[in-house]
Structures are given as structure tokens and as C-alpha cells.
Image 1 (cartoon, each protein chain N blue to C red):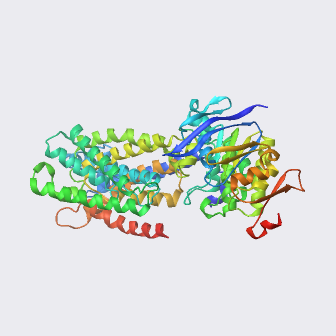
Image 2: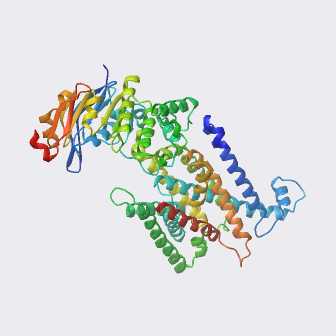
Image 3: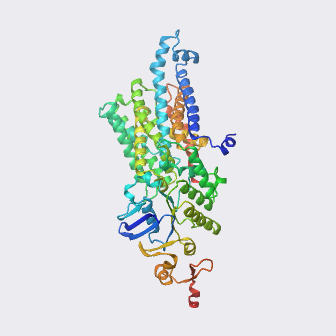
Length: 341
Length: 266
């Protein structure tokens, strides 16, 4: 039905962007509300609504739990989900590879090694640990690009293979460091390797939010150049894109964003695959739509994954990374099959 | 006649291998200018240097009287449009989206395409006869259709100079002719300068105002088809025997390849 109305009069792009963003924002709002309402403590929806809209007559302890514990966790999940989804979108466009994603490329792993090194060296979380995490992510990104570039063209499988190996190496370094030091500041191996959002802290999450906003804005601005880059570097350059400047900016901004997320969540695999690919199926390849949609949808996706992890009956808590990997890894295999054809 | 492109003493090398050796020529507004020469003669490098994709080691390029270096990426892309030899095989966009991208140089960073941009894109698609393919994905099209879409994209850019790197290679006869005729219309209608790299000497003679014959990065000859397509010059450049006579259709040279077995006929 949409095809008919748009055949002669293409719906202005602005309205499509607004429409898609609105839908994704609603999805995010619903996910956030469910994230606040459900969880280990099992609140009733009505009570949570009353607390959020500040109507009197609610249990102050319950309100306190929501504001101090649930809200930071939901906020963190949405920020990390947004950052990783957007990271996947950018890497997929820039490397022309549908399988590219911060975790698979080893960038998340590099950031985690950097963050752990920072913590062990006794740096403050900001800026010391964050800067080391950023350095770690940039170093692994460069390493993967150098390994996989064979002279001229970057081979698709080579890139993924290099990423997976770098990632495996980083994981072993993380395990080694956490095992030998037993430092209480490091949380635990599971936090780093499987990703966990239960450590969310309101103050840290707000700082993370402020750090993310300029990254999101920067990527939004470069959405059209990302489209043009898909036409090949030569044609992108001929359409006014400073290919080198745009590529470097996107890689640096994305690595920064991912490393900041990893510092707070550990290694969450495959988050950058799910939303970008789902959204491409639904809305097409235009990044001016995909960037805001991935941002909002990625946030919603991780909140829901975390919700699932919290609500499944477990001994203690299940790390959210278990869920993201269970959903993402089969998708990865499917995409790998398709890209080989 | 206003000059739209001037190349002077252009020199470039990949490592030790010189690919452009003091190449000089100029192209006028509305001129059909075709670059010919054997493989590896530096034609593609020349196109890259003129489109700004490559920084030459020496010499200069002037576009509309201003040095290429003085243009920003965007300003240059409003004047020079390129139809490259190869594009990625996995472009996910529809024909309409690809053609509309030609408006990018005319838009601000966050500006979206307006109704007028969409009209210009539609006209460009009608011009190269791909408007019926508007909703199809580029990677579903035939070679000839793809080439017409890429030309529509370049036309949509509303350039003063259009560069085409072997646009008719691997196309069937009807498509070759269509693309040459489109360029003919473009230069007469819009006074766009057409600079084309081609291997087809006969089509080149029929359409071009002037030809540039290159070999080993050097200019062998530049001038009208009559001046350039001359038996001795071609033999020296291509290193094979060719028959040059007159084209009965239009009074220009006609070139026939001569198989080894038939050389004694000459």
C-alpha cells in the first residue's frame, strides 16, 4: 500500500525520517517502561507508572529503587545498545561488509583490555580508564585493518577472520589479567567477557550519556556521506565527499563511542548486527533514516535483552551478553551464508 | 569559445613507473573530446587527475580558468561529473536514489533533497531513458541499464564538464550508440564539455570534435580526427597494422583491423 502512494509522489524524506524516528522512539519508550516495571523486583505496571508520573500515594522505598537502581540500568542499556548498534551500522557501511560489528572486529575486546589496564594502574574512571579503553579500541581497529588489507582491496572474509582472532586474543588477555590480579575493582571475568549491565551507576551513566551525545550528532551529520561512500570511493569523491577525512572521522568517533560503552558494560557481542540489519530490511539502505533508527532501536533492543536476562529464572543473575549472543550469533551465521553467495 | 579545461605539463608516476609524461591539452565549452590509446597509456590516470581523485606529481589542471587546487571538494563536484570505469557490484540503492545522489554537491551538509532536486533527477532519468527503472535496485540491472543510470547520476549533478572512462566498453551495439548519442545531445543542449576515454576509434571519429592519442603516458597527437587518425601515427602507437580509409557516412577516417593472414592484401 505504501508503494502505491509513493510511486508518483515520493514521500518527502523529511517526513519519512520523522515517521521512522517517531516509531523507534515509541518502541524505546515502551522498552524503557517495561525495563523499569519488570525485573528481579517484579513491580506492577500501574505502580511504576504512578511513580514515574509522580502521583502521590506510592511506596517511597519502591520509588527509591526505581529511581536509584532501575533507571540507571535502563539508561545504561539504552546508551550501550545505541552505541553498539550505531557502531555496527558505521562499520558495515565504511568497510562495505555486512558482518562488521564492534565485537566481531575485536574493537570491543581492545577497549576492554585498555579499560582493565587502566583500572589496574589505578586511574580514575574518567578520563584515565576511558582514554586507555579508547586507545585499546583504536589499536585493535588499526591492527585488524592492517592484517586484513592485502595491498589494495580489503577482503571481506579476511577482515572478519582477523577481527575474530584479535577478539580471541583480547579475551584471553582479559581472563589472564582478571585471574592473576583478583582485584576487587575489576568486578569479575563474567562481567568483562559476557557483558553485564547490573553494575549501572547513576553518576557514571550520566557522564556516559554526555560523552555519547556529540558522537551521535557527529555520525548523524555524516549520514549522507555514508550513503555516497557505498557508491565507491571514486564516485563519493566526485560527489563532493572528502573521503579520507570522512572515513577517519567516522572510525575515530565510532571507536570512541564503542570504547566508552565497553567500559560500562563489558563485552556485549553481536548487538551491532541485529538492529542495523532489521532496519535495513524495513526501511532500505538510506543512512539518513538508518542512523536515527539504529540509535533509538539499538537502545530499545538492549533494554529488552536485559529485561529478558533479568526475568528468566536463574541462579543469581544472567549476564545480558548471554542473550545478545544467543540472538546475534545465528544471525551472523545467516549473514555469512548470504554474503558468500 | 570559452575554454572549460586546460591541462598543462601534467606528470604522474606510480612508484618509478611514469604514467603521465608532460601531458598538455585543452577542451572548450560544449566540445566532444575523446582520449584514445592502447592499454596502459595513462588514459584512466588522466581522468583521475582531472576529476581531482588523484594528486599529480607535476603540472597543472585548470577548470573554468581556475586551478584545480583552488576548488573545494564540493565546489569541484558542482562543475566536474565523473562516470567511472567500475563501480562496486553491491550498491544497495534504487535507481532513483542513485540518480538523486547527484544532487549532493548542491546541498548543504544537513539539507535534504527538495522537490526541485527530485525534478532534476527525474529529467536526468528521462534523458538517459531509465525512468521506468526508478524503483529497481541498481544491482538487479543489466550492464547497459546500469551505465545509463550512472550517466543519469552524472547529468543530475548539472556539471559543466563530464568525464567518462570507457563508458561503452562491454556494451552491445545499440547501447554503445545510445550512450554516444546522449553525450552528443548533452554537449549541444547544455553546452557541457564531454571528455571520454574510448577504445573504439571509429565511434571516436564519428562523434569527437577532437581526439587525444596517448601512448606510455605521452601525447602522441592531438587534433581533429583527420589530423590524429592517420595510418603511420596509428601504426606507431598501437604497433599493429591497420587500414585507414574514409567513412562513407561522414567524411572522417575509418579504421579497420587487419588480421595477420590478410596483411599481404595491403
